[in-house]
Every structure is written in structure tokens, then in C-alpha cells.
Image (tube, rainbow, N blue to C red; front, top):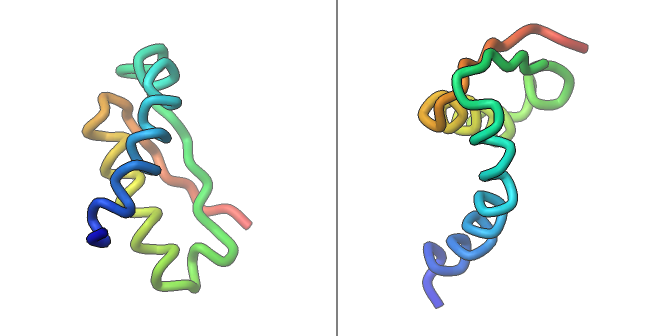
Length: 68
């Protein structure tokens, strides 16, 4: 099984679970705290950035604030 197929199913399950929340909050501003380990770990920083971009493309208006 390729890596892409290996990671696609868990991501699809998460998106299916999140879909009602995304629809309910479409167009709204969401505040996201960025701090702690996410600020010093390169992998976590990259994942955080990808998640913020996803939220924007999913129709939300993410605002990142410093926390921690």
C-alpha cells in the first residue's frame, strides 16, 4: 500500500466527521491559538499552517493569535 493511500482513509474519516461543523460555521471567524510546542517544532508548524489554509478554503475565516 502506498503512503498516499495509507493516509487518505484516516483523513477522509476526519473530514466526514468535521463536515457538519464546517457547514454550521461556514463564513464565520474562528480564533486559533498558536503557541507552545507548535511554535518550536518544525513539523507541528507545518501541520498548523496546512490546517489554517484548509479552514480558509473550507469557508471559514481563521484568525491566529499568539498563546502560551
